[in-house]
Length: 191
Image (cartoon, rainbow, N blue to C red; front, side, top):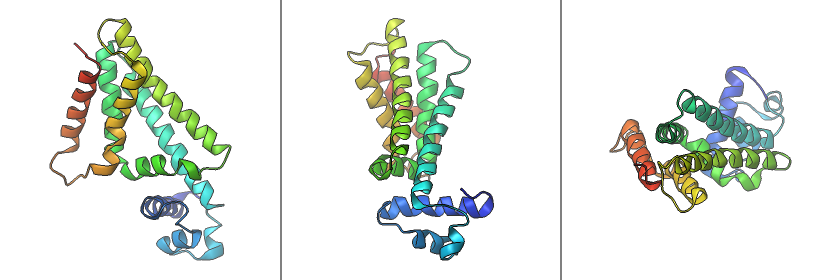
């Protein structure tokens, strides 16, 4: 994958086009036109449209996993760990709405083995939230009948932002993050 300003511009154009038109509805010519590069010159920077999708989705999942690792460092308290993880999750989705939208809508367009790799990263991310809930239950800090369902609901608090959150909207990012975090803590019966 191309690096530098041109590579960055190609990835940004692909992301916007995949979000607006879908992967199947976007051609390499569309991506090239969006950055002012024609035909063979585009292939000097990127091997294929599939490579762009793989990079976008892998980078998104790697970013989420890393932000969560950083958020959880330095505390063993289950409530604080969940608070930090939800904060990072919601903030990421508020700041990366297009990536979240493409990640949710274009999994079907990933070819193997990339589809399996991204699905594996998604499963790891979900399991990490489930473990946070399970740890809180084991410590007597959370009360939920199903840690799995609670983790899915918490994940939806962030992922849903891709469809409705706007920077210029009624609530600031910090207000949305605070409220979504409070919702998550109530959801698990944090006391």
